[in-house]
Image (cartoon, rainbow, N blue to C red; front, side, top):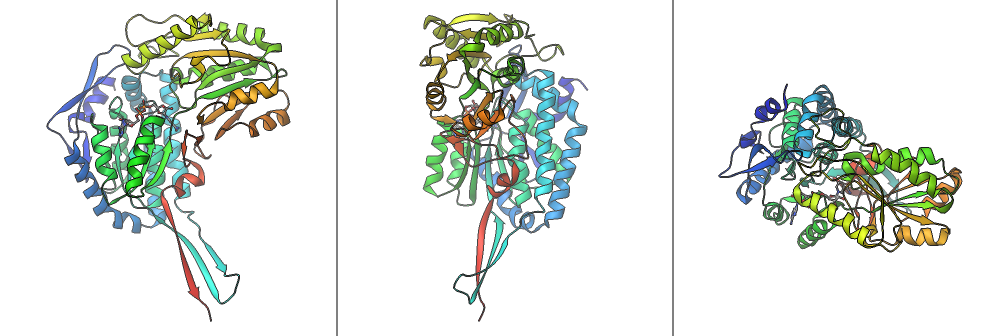
Length: 484
Ligand code: NAD
Protein backbone atom coordinates (compact mmCIF):
# COMPACT_ATOMS: atom_id res chain seq x y z
CA UNK A 1 0.00 0.00 0.00
CA UNK A 2 1.36 3.42 -0.91
CA UNK A 3 1.38 6.25 1.60
CA UNK A 4 -1.15 8.14 -0.52
CA UNK A 5 -3.54 5.16 -0.42
CA UNK A 6 -3.05 4.77 3.33
CA UNK A 7 -3.95 8.43 3.81
CA UNK A 8 -6.92 8.27 1.40
CA UNK A 9 -8.33 5.21 3.20
CA UNK A 10 -8.43 7.16 6.47
CA UNK A 11 -11.00 9.60 5.07
CA UNK A 12 -9.49 12.38 7.19
CA UNK A 13 -12.16 14.85 6.04
CA UNK A 14 -14.39 12.79 8.31
CA UNK A 15 -11.70 12.54 10.99
CA UNK A 16 -13.83 13.54 13.95
CA UNK A 17 -14.83 10.38 15.80
CA UNK A 18 -17.84 10.57 18.07
CA UNK A 19 -19.81 7.60 19.35
CA UNK A 20 -18.33 5.36 16.67
CA UNK A 21 -19.31 7.68 13.81
CA UNK A 22 -16.76 9.41 11.53
CA UNK A 23 -17.87 13.01 11.12
CA UNK A 24 -16.90 15.97 8.99
CA UNK A 25 -16.90 19.60 10.04
CA UNK A 26 -17.67 22.99 8.53
CA UNK A 27 -13.95 23.49 7.86
CA UNK A 28 -10.87 21.36 7.29
CA UNK A 29 -7.19 21.96 8.02
CA UNK A 30 -4.09 20.88 6.11
CA UNK A 31 -1.51 18.34 7.19
CA UNK A 32 1.95 18.72 5.62
CA UNK A 33 4.84 16.43 4.79
CA UNK A 34 7.74 18.12 6.64
CA UNK A 35 10.24 16.84 4.07
CA UNK A 36 8.59 18.72 1.22
CA UNK A 37 6.14 21.15 2.79
CA UNK A 38 3.44 19.61 0.55
CA UNK A 39 -0.13 19.18 1.74
CA UNK A 40 -0.81 15.47 2.24
CA UNK A 41 -4.29 15.54 3.77
CA UNK A 42 -7.23 17.71 4.75
CA UNK A 43 -8.66 16.91 8.15
CA UNK A 44 -12.02 17.84 9.69
CA UNK A 45 -11.42 20.82 11.99
CA UNK A 46 -13.34 20.21 15.20
CA UNK A 47 -14.87 23.01 17.23
CA UNK A 48 -16.32 23.29 20.72
CA UNK A 49 -19.61 21.85 19.39
CA UNK A 50 -17.84 18.59 18.50
CA UNK A 51 -15.83 18.77 21.73
CA UNK A 52 -19.07 18.80 23.73
CA UNK A 53 -20.60 16.05 21.60
CA UNK A 54 -17.49 13.92 22.20
CA UNK A 55 -17.92 14.29 25.97
CA UNK A 56 -21.63 13.47 25.62
CA UNK A 57 -20.64 10.19 23.93
CA UNK A 58 -17.85 9.37 26.37
CA UNK A 59 -20.12 10.11 29.32
CA UNK A 60 -22.87 7.86 27.94
CA UNK A 61 -20.42 5.03 27.27
CA UNK A 62 -18.69 5.27 30.64
CA UNK A 63 -21.00 3.16 32.88
CA UNK A 64 -21.05 0.26 30.41
CA UNK A 65 -17.30 0.29 29.82
CA UNK A 66 -16.51 0.64 33.53
CA UNK A 67 -18.75 -2.36 34.21
CA UNK A 68 -17.18 -4.49 31.44
CA UNK A 69 -15.17 -7.17 33.18
CA UNK A 70 -11.42 -6.57 33.29
CA UNK A 71 -10.67 -9.72 31.32
CA UNK A 72 -12.83 -8.52 28.43
CA UNK A 73 -11.14 -5.09 28.48
CA UNK A 74 -7.78 -6.82 28.63
CA UNK A 75 -8.50 -9.00 25.62
CA UNK A 76 -9.62 -6.04 23.53
CA UNK A 77 -6.37 -4.23 24.35
CA UNK A 78 -4.38 -7.32 23.52
CA UNK A 79 -6.16 -7.54 20.14
CA UNK A 80 -5.28 -3.89 19.54
CA UNK A 81 -1.62 -4.82 20.14
CA UNK A 82 -1.81 -7.66 17.60
CA UNK A 83 -3.55 -5.46 15.03
CA UNK A 84 -0.99 -2.67 15.44
CA UNK A 85 1.92 -5.04 14.96
CA UNK A 86 0.24 -6.59 11.91
CA UNK A 87 -0.30 -3.09 10.52
CA UNK A 88 3.23 -1.78 11.15
CA UNK A 89 3.92 -0.91 7.51
CA UNK A 90 0.85 1.33 7.16
CA UNK A 91 1.29 2.97 10.57
CA UNK A 92 4.99 3.65 10.00
CA UNK A 93 4.17 5.15 6.59
CA UNK A 94 1.65 7.52 8.19
CA UNK A 95 4.16 8.56 10.88
CA UNK A 96 6.82 9.18 8.22
CA UNK A 97 4.39 11.16 6.09
CA UNK A 98 3.13 13.57 8.74
CA UNK A 99 5.98 13.67 11.26
CA UNK A 100 8.94 13.21 8.91
CA UNK A 101 11.00 10.86 11.09
CA UNK A 102 13.07 8.15 9.38
CA UNK A 103 11.55 4.78 8.50
CA UNK A 104 13.64 3.06 11.18
CA UNK A 105 12.50 5.56 13.84
CA UNK A 106 8.87 5.29 12.69
CA UNK A 107 8.88 1.49 12.83
CA UNK A 108 10.50 1.59 16.26
CA UNK A 109 7.77 3.98 17.39
CA UNK A 110 4.99 1.66 16.18
CA UNK A 111 6.52 -1.23 18.15
CA UNK A 112 6.91 0.95 21.25
CA UNK A 113 3.38 2.34 20.88
CA UNK A 114 1.83 -1.12 20.47
CA UNK A 115 3.60 -2.31 23.61
CA UNK A 116 1.40 0.01 25.68
CA UNK A 117 -1.63 -1.98 24.54
CA UNK A 118 0.09 -5.25 25.47
CA UNK A 119 1.39 -3.99 28.81
CA UNK A 120 -1.94 -2.52 29.90
CA UNK A 121 -3.81 -5.60 28.63
CA UNK A 122 -1.72 -7.38 31.26
CA UNK A 123 -2.31 -4.73 33.94
CA UNK A 124 -6.08 -4.45 33.32
CA UNK A 125 -6.67 -7.67 35.25
CA UNK A 126 -4.36 -6.77 38.15
CA UNK A 127 -6.17 -3.96 39.92
CA UNK A 128 -5.58 -5.28 43.39
CA UNK A 129 -6.89 -3.72 46.58
CA UNK A 130 -6.27 -4.27 50.28
CA UNK A 131 -7.98 -5.73 53.31
CA UNK A 132 -6.93 -4.40 56.71
CA UNK A 133 -7.69 -4.49 60.41
CA UNK A 134 -7.98 -1.04 61.94
CA UNK A 135 -5.20 -0.51 64.52
CA UNK A 136 -7.81 0.13 67.24
CA UNK A 137 -9.60 -3.12 66.31
CA UNK A 138 -13.35 -3.47 65.84
CA UNK A 139 -13.22 -2.24 62.22
CA UNK A 140 -12.13 -3.80 58.99
CA UNK A 141 -10.90 -1.68 56.07
CA UNK A 142 -11.24 -2.49 52.39
CA UNK A 143 -9.39 -0.52 49.73
CA UNK A 144 -10.40 -0.71 46.09
CA UNK A 145 -9.88 1.24 42.86
CA UNK A 146 -12.42 2.69 40.45
CA UNK A 147 -11.98 4.29 37.02
CA UNK A 148 -11.72 8.04 37.47
CA UNK A 149 -14.31 8.76 34.74
CA UNK A 150 -14.27 10.50 31.38
CA UNK A 151 -10.64 11.40 30.57
CA UNK A 152 -9.45 14.18 28.24
CA UNK A 153 -6.21 13.19 26.47
CA UNK A 154 -4.05 15.78 24.70
CA UNK A 155 -1.00 14.63 22.73
CA UNK A 156 1.96 16.20 20.88
CA UNK A 157 3.24 15.62 17.33
CA UNK A 158 6.67 14.15 18.10
CA UNK A 159 5.45 10.59 18.80
CA UNK A 160 2.07 10.56 17.05
CA UNK A 161 1.42 6.88 17.85
CA UNK A 162 3.13 6.32 21.17
CA UNK A 163 1.85 9.39 22.98
CA UNK A 164 -1.71 8.36 22.07
CA UNK A 165 -1.40 4.68 23.08
CA UNK A 166 0.49 5.58 26.28
CA UNK A 167 -2.68 7.35 27.43
CA UNK A 168 -5.49 5.39 25.73
CA UNK A 169 -4.24 1.98 26.90
CA UNK A 170 -4.18 2.67 30.66
CA UNK A 171 -7.38 4.71 30.47
CA UNK A 172 -9.25 1.83 28.82
CA UNK A 173 -7.62 -0.75 31.09
CA UNK A 174 -8.85 1.18 34.12
CA UNK A 175 -12.40 1.40 32.71
CA UNK A 176 -12.34 5.07 31.66
CA UNK A 177 -13.76 6.41 28.42
CA UNK A 178 -11.79 9.08 26.57
CA UNK A 179 -11.89 12.17 24.40
CA UNK A 180 -8.62 12.63 22.52
CA UNK A 181 -7.19 15.71 20.85
CA UNK A 182 -4.14 14.83 18.74
CA UNK A 183 -1.67 17.50 17.64
CA UNK A 184 -2.83 19.32 14.49
CA UNK A 185 0.52 18.49 12.81
CA UNK A 186 -0.02 14.71 13.15
CA UNK A 187 -3.70 13.69 13.36
CA UNK A 188 -3.50 10.88 10.77
CA UNK A 189 -1.67 8.33 12.91
CA UNK A 190 -4.15 8.92 15.76
CA UNK A 191 -6.99 8.41 13.32
CA UNK A 192 -5.51 5.08 12.20
CA UNK A 193 -5.12 4.00 15.85
CA UNK A 194 -8.75 4.88 16.55
CA UNK A 195 -9.70 2.58 13.64
CA UNK A 196 -7.55 -0.21 15.08
CA UNK A 197 -9.22 0.13 18.47
CA UNK A 198 -12.61 -0.12 16.89
CA UNK A 199 -11.54 -3.22 14.93
CA UNK A 200 -10.21 -4.70 18.18
CA UNK A 201 -13.69 -4.46 19.70
CA UNK A 202 -13.70 -1.17 21.63
CA UNK A 203 -17.40 -0.20 21.81
CA UNK A 204 -18.67 3.03 20.23
CA UNK A 205 -18.29 6.06 22.49
CA UNK A 206 -15.38 4.65 24.53
CA UNK A 207 -12.74 6.39 22.38
CA UNK A 208 -13.73 9.71 20.79
CA UNK A 209 -11.40 12.01 18.90
CA UNK A 210 -11.53 15.67 17.96
CA UNK A 211 -8.74 16.93 15.67
CA UNK A 212 -8.72 20.72 15.66
CA UNK A 213 -6.69 23.82 14.95
CA UNK A 214 -8.32 25.48 17.97
CA UNK A 215 -6.68 23.40 20.69
CA UNK A 216 -7.17 26.09 23.31
CA UNK A 217 -10.96 26.26 22.85
CA UNK A 218 -11.51 22.49 22.58
CA UNK A 219 -9.43 21.60 25.62
CA UNK A 220 -10.80 24.46 27.71
CA UNK A 221 -14.29 23.25 26.82
CA UNK A 222 -13.38 19.81 28.18
CA UNK A 223 -11.76 21.13 31.32
CA UNK A 224 -14.79 23.27 32.13
CA UNK A 225 -17.21 20.35 31.64
CA UNK A 226 -18.28 18.77 34.94
CA UNK A 227 -18.40 15.34 33.32
CA UNK A 228 -14.64 15.34 32.54
CA UNK A 229 -12.82 14.03 35.61
CA UNK A 230 -9.29 13.63 34.28
CA UNK A 231 -6.82 15.38 31.99
CA UNK A 232 -3.70 13.64 30.73
CA UNK A 233 -1.46 15.97 28.76
CA UNK A 234 1.85 15.51 26.97
CA UNK A 235 3.47 18.60 25.53
CA UNK A 236 5.38 21.70 26.48
CA UNK A 237 5.73 22.98 30.03
CA UNK A 238 4.16 26.29 29.00
CA UNK A 239 0.92 24.70 27.77
CA UNK A 240 0.94 22.28 30.72
CA UNK A 241 0.97 25.25 33.07
CA UNK A 242 -2.09 26.73 31.30
CA UNK A 243 -3.98 23.44 31.54
CA UNK A 244 -3.11 22.98 35.22
CA UNK A 245 -4.61 26.41 35.93
CA UNK A 246 -7.78 25.41 34.06
CA UNK A 247 -7.86 22.06 35.87
CA UNK A 248 -7.61 23.88 39.20
CA UNK A 249 -11.04 25.48 38.78
CA UNK A 250 -12.84 22.14 39.04
CA UNK A 251 -10.02 20.22 40.82
CA UNK A 252 -9.64 17.94 37.79
CA UNK A 253 -7.24 15.05 38.30
CA UNK A 254 -4.22 15.97 36.12
CA UNK A 255 -1.26 14.03 34.72
CA UNK A 256 1.36 16.15 32.98
CA UNK A 257 4.23 14.88 30.80
CA UNK A 258 6.07 18.08 29.95
CA UNK A 259 9.31 19.38 28.54
CA UNK A 260 12.81 18.19 29.34
CA UNK A 261 16.42 19.34 29.28
CA UNK A 262 18.32 16.10 29.66
CA UNK A 263 21.99 16.15 30.65
CA UNK A 264 24.28 13.45 29.22
CA UNK A 265 27.28 12.89 31.46
CA UNK A 266 30.49 11.06 30.54
CA UNK A 267 32.94 10.32 33.35
CA UNK A 268 36.72 9.93 33.14
CA UNK A 269 36.60 6.13 33.21
CA UNK A 270 33.62 5.67 30.86
CA UNK A 271 33.75 3.44 27.80
CA UNK A 272 33.90 6.30 25.29
CA UNK A 273 32.93 4.18 22.31
CA UNK A 274 29.77 3.04 24.12
CA UNK A 275 29.09 6.61 25.27
CA UNK A 276 29.24 7.86 21.68
CA UNK A 277 26.87 5.10 20.53
CA UNK A 278 24.48 6.07 23.35
CA UNK A 279 24.83 9.75 22.53
CA UNK A 280 23.81 9.13 18.91
CA UNK A 281 20.58 7.47 20.06
CA UNK A 282 19.85 9.88 22.92
CA UNK A 283 20.43 12.91 20.72
CA UNK A 284 19.52 12.11 17.13
CA UNK A 285 16.57 9.67 17.36
CA UNK A 286 13.64 11.52 15.76
CA UNK A 287 16.02 14.36 14.87
CA UNK A 288 16.34 15.32 18.53
CA UNK A 289 12.61 16.02 18.78
CA UNK A 290 12.04 13.98 21.90
CA UNK A 291 11.32 15.17 25.42
CA UNK A 292 13.96 12.68 26.57
CA UNK A 293 16.53 13.87 24.01
CA UNK A 294 19.99 14.57 25.40
CA UNK A 295 20.07 18.36 25.41
CA UNK A 296 23.50 19.08 26.90
CA UNK A 297 26.62 16.93 27.10
CA UNK A 298 29.02 17.11 30.07
CA UNK A 299 32.20 15.22 29.22
CA UNK A 300 35.16 14.79 31.56
CA UNK A 301 38.27 16.70 30.50
CA UNK A 302 40.36 13.53 30.37
CA UNK A 303 38.19 11.98 27.61
CA UNK A 304 36.91 15.09 25.83
CA UNK A 305 39.22 14.80 22.81
CA UNK A 306 38.39 11.17 22.15
CA UNK A 307 34.65 11.76 22.70
CA UNK A 308 34.49 14.78 20.37
CA UNK A 309 36.51 13.13 17.65
CA UNK A 310 34.43 9.90 17.72
CA UNK A 311 31.08 11.71 18.03
CA UNK A 312 32.09 14.22 15.36
CA UNK A 313 32.80 11.42 12.90
CA UNK A 314 29.38 9.85 13.58
CA UNK A 315 27.53 13.18 13.30
CA UNK A 316 29.22 14.13 10.04
CA UNK A 317 28.32 10.72 8.57
CA UNK A 318 24.61 10.94 9.39
CA UNK A 319 22.34 10.54 6.37
CA UNK A 320 19.84 13.39 6.49
CA UNK A 321 16.89 13.21 4.13
CA UNK A 322 13.22 12.50 3.60
CA UNK A 323 11.67 9.43 5.19
CA UNK A 324 10.72 8.25 1.69
CA UNK A 325 14.41 7.33 1.29
CA UNK A 326 15.00 4.19 3.41
CA UNK A 327 18.66 5.20 3.87
CA UNK A 328 17.71 8.43 5.70
CA UNK A 329 18.66 8.33 9.37
CA UNK A 330 17.52 11.82 10.32
CA UNK A 331 14.46 13.51 8.83
CA UNK A 332 13.33 17.13 8.76
CA UNK A 333 12.01 19.07 11.74
CA UNK A 334 8.26 19.14 12.09
CA UNK A 335 7.61 22.56 10.57
CA UNK A 336 9.25 25.70 9.26
CA UNK A 337 9.02 27.44 12.64
CA UNK A 338 10.91 24.62 14.37
CA UNK A 339 13.61 24.63 11.68
CA UNK A 340 14.07 28.40 12.02
CA UNK A 341 14.18 28.19 15.83
CA UNK A 342 16.87 25.47 15.88
CA UNK A 343 18.96 27.20 13.20
CA UNK A 344 18.77 30.40 15.23
CA UNK A 345 19.89 28.51 18.36
CA UNK A 346 22.99 27.22 16.52
CA UNK A 347 23.81 30.72 15.24
CA UNK A 348 23.36 32.25 18.69
CA UNK A 349 25.59 29.60 20.28
CA UNK A 350 28.33 30.27 17.71
CA UNK A 351 28.02 34.02 18.30
CA UNK A 352 28.40 33.17 21.99
CA UNK A 353 31.75 31.44 21.39
CA UNK A 354 30.81 27.85 20.55
CA UNK A 355 32.56 26.07 17.69
CA UNK A 356 30.92 23.81 15.09
CA UNK A 357 33.12 20.74 15.53
CA UNK A 358 31.15 18.61 13.08
CA UNK A 359 28.07 18.92 10.92
CA UNK A 360 26.21 16.57 8.61
CA UNK A 361 24.91 17.56 5.21
CA UNK A 362 21.22 18.32 4.89
CA UNK A 363 18.93 18.93 1.92
CA UNK A 364 18.25 22.58 1.17
CA UNK A 365 14.54 21.99 0.44
CA UNK A 366 12.10 21.05 3.23
CA UNK A 367 12.36 21.77 6.94
CA UNK A 368 15.78 20.19 7.49
CA UNK A 369 18.46 21.27 9.95
CA UNK A 370 21.90 19.70 9.66
CA UNK A 371 22.89 17.63 12.72
CA UNK A 372 25.53 19.69 14.49
CA UNK A 373 28.15 19.08 17.19
CA UNK A 374 29.08 22.20 19.17
CA UNK A 375 32.20 22.36 21.33
CA UNK A 376 33.71 25.11 23.46
CA UNK A 377 30.30 25.66 25.04
CA UNK A 378 30.46 27.56 28.36
CA UNK A 379 28.61 25.98 31.30
CA UNK A 380 26.28 28.99 31.48
CA UNK A 381 25.66 29.26 27.71
CA UNK A 382 22.09 30.09 26.68
CA UNK A 383 21.78 27.01 24.45
CA UNK A 384 21.96 24.79 27.54
CA UNK A 385 19.04 26.47 29.25
CA UNK A 386 16.19 25.58 26.89
CA UNK A 387 14.92 22.47 25.20
CA UNK A 388 16.65 22.52 21.76
CA UNK A 389 14.23 19.96 20.26
CA UNK A 390 16.47 19.51 17.25
CA UNK A 391 19.65 17.70 16.11
CA UNK A 392 22.20 19.84 17.95
CA UNK A 393 24.64 18.50 20.55
CA UNK A 394 26.39 21.15 22.70
CA UNK A 395 29.35 19.77 24.66
CA UNK A 396 30.69 21.21 27.93
CA UNK A 397 33.90 20.02 29.60
CA UNK A 398 33.84 19.15 33.32
CA UNK A 399 36.57 18.37 35.81
CA UNK A 400 35.13 18.56 39.34
CA UNK A 401 32.11 16.63 40.51
CA UNK A 402 30.65 19.50 42.52
CA UNK A 403 30.60 21.69 39.38
CA UNK A 404 29.03 18.85 37.39
CA UNK A 405 26.20 18.27 39.86
CA UNK A 406 25.47 21.98 40.10
CA UNK A 407 25.27 22.31 36.31
CA UNK A 408 23.22 19.14 35.85
CA UNK A 409 20.54 20.27 38.30
CA UNK A 410 20.57 23.96 37.38
CA UNK A 411 17.33 23.78 35.37
CA UNK A 412 13.59 23.95 35.93
CA UNK A 413 13.28 20.63 34.09
CA UNK A 414 13.76 17.14 35.51
CA UNK A 415 12.68 14.55 32.97
CA UNK A 416 15.53 12.35 31.72
CA UNK A 417 19.30 12.20 32.29
CA UNK A 418 22.04 9.91 31.02
CA UNK A 419 25.33 8.86 32.53
CA UNK A 420 28.18 6.78 31.16
CA UNK A 421 30.68 5.67 33.81
CA UNK A 422 33.15 2.80 34.19
CA UNK A 423 32.01 1.72 37.64
CA UNK A 424 28.29 1.06 38.14
CA UNK A 425 28.44 2.22 41.74
CA UNK A 426 29.78 5.63 40.63
CA UNK A 427 27.06 5.89 37.99
CA UNK A 428 24.32 5.10 40.51
CA UNK A 429 25.82 7.43 43.15
CA UNK A 430 25.79 10.31 40.64
CA UNK A 431 22.40 9.33 39.20
CA UNK A 432 20.87 9.44 42.68
CA UNK A 433 21.79 13.11 42.94
CA UNK A 434 20.30 14.03 39.54
CA UNK A 435 16.89 15.74 39.73
CA UNK A 436 15.50 13.57 36.94
CA UNK A 437 12.58 11.14 36.82
CA UNK A 438 14.51 8.75 34.56
CA UNK A 439 18.23 8.10 34.27
CA UNK A 440 19.83 6.00 31.53
CA UNK A 441 22.93 4.34 32.99
CA UNK A 442 25.34 3.32 30.28
CA UNK A 443 22.29 3.44 27.96
CA UNK A 444 21.07 6.15 25.59
CA UNK A 445 17.41 5.26 25.88
CA UNK A 446 15.07 5.14 28.88
CA UNK A 447 11.59 4.57 27.42
CA UNK A 448 9.97 1.23 28.27
CA UNK A 449 6.20 0.67 28.70
CA UNK A 450 6.88 -1.49 31.76
CA UNK A 451 8.59 1.37 33.62
CA UNK A 452 7.27 4.62 35.13
CA UNK A 453 7.89 7.38 32.60
CA UNK A 454 7.72 10.95 33.89
CA UNK A 455 9.51 13.93 35.26
CA UNK A 456 10.38 15.88 38.40
CA UNK A 457 10.21 19.65 38.86
CA UNK A 458 8.56 21.45 35.93
CA UNK A 459 8.81 18.37 33.69
CA UNK A 460 5.52 17.10 34.99
CA UNK A 461 3.22 15.39 37.44
CA UNK A 462 2.49 11.68 37.51
CA UNK A 463 3.87 8.76 35.54
CA UNK A 464 2.90 6.84 32.41
CA UNK A 465 3.57 3.16 31.80
CA UNK A 466 4.18 0.57 34.52
CA UNK A 467 1.66 0.02 37.33
CA UNK A 468 1.68 3.76 38.02
CA UNK A 469 0.30 4.49 34.55
CA UNK A 470 -2.90 2.60 35.38
CA UNK A 471 -3.25 4.29 38.76
CA UNK A 472 -3.27 7.70 37.03
CA UNK A 473 -6.71 6.73 35.68
CA UNK A 474 -8.06 5.34 38.93
CA UNK A 475 -9.60 6.72 42.10
CA UNK A 476 -8.88 4.96 45.35
CA UNK A 477 -11.99 4.16 47.38
CA UNK A 478 -12.03 2.66 50.83
CA UNK A 479 -14.76 1.04 52.92
CA UNK A 480 -14.75 1.19 56.70
CA UNK A 481 -16.62 -1.89 57.89
CA UNK A 482 -18.09 -2.27 61.39
CA UNK A 483 -16.91 -5.60 62.78
CA UNK A 484 -18.33 -5.91 66.30
P1 NAD B 1 2.69 21.81 22.71
O1 NAD B 1 2.60 22.00 24.18
O2 NAD B 1 2.75 22.99 21.84
O3 NAD B 1 1.43 20.96 22.20
C1 NAD B 1 1.04 19.75 22.80
C2 NAD B 1 -0.45 19.56 22.60
O4 NAD B 1 -1.14 20.61 23.27
C3 NAD B 1 -0.88 19.62 21.14
O5 NAD B 1 -1.94 18.70 20.96
C4 NAD B 1 -1.37 21.04 20.99
O6 NAD B 1 -2.33 21.19 19.97
C5 NAD B 1 -2.00 21.27 22.36
N1 NAD B 1 -2.10 22.68 22.75
C6 NAD B 1 -1.32 23.72 22.36
N2 NAD B 1 -1.74 24.86 22.96
C7 NAD B 1 -2.79 24.53 23.74
C8 NAD B 1 -3.64 25.27 24.61
N3 NAD B 1 -3.49 26.57 24.81
N4 NAD B 1 -4.61 24.61 25.27
C9 NAD B 1 -4.77 23.29 25.10
N5 NAD B 1 -4.00 22.53 24.30
C10 NAD B 1 -3.01 23.14 23.62
O7 NAD B 1 3.91 20.83 22.50
P2 NAD B 1 4.45 20.25 21.12
O8 NAD B 1 5.23 21.31 20.45
O9 NAD B 1 3.35 19.58 20.35
O10 NAD B 1 5.38 19.10 21.65
C11 NAD B 1 6.67 19.34 22.07
C12 NAD B 1 6.73 19.42 23.59
O11 NAD B 1 6.18 18.23 24.15
C13 NAD B 1 8.14 19.49 24.09
O12 NAD B 1 8.24 20.43 25.14
C14 NAD B 1 8.40 18.08 24.62
O13 NAD B 1 9.39 18.00 25.60
C15 NAD B 1 7.07 17.72 25.14
N6 NAD B 1 6.93 16.28 25.25
C16 NAD B 1 6.95 15.72 26.49
C17 NAD B 1 6.87 14.36 26.63
C18 NAD B 1 6.87 13.74 27.99
O14 NAD B 1 6.47 12.59 28.09
N7 NAD B 1 7.28 14.42 29.04
C19 NAD B 1 6.76 13.54 25.50
C20 NAD B 1 6.75 14.15 24.24
C21 NAD B 1 6.84 15.52 24.13
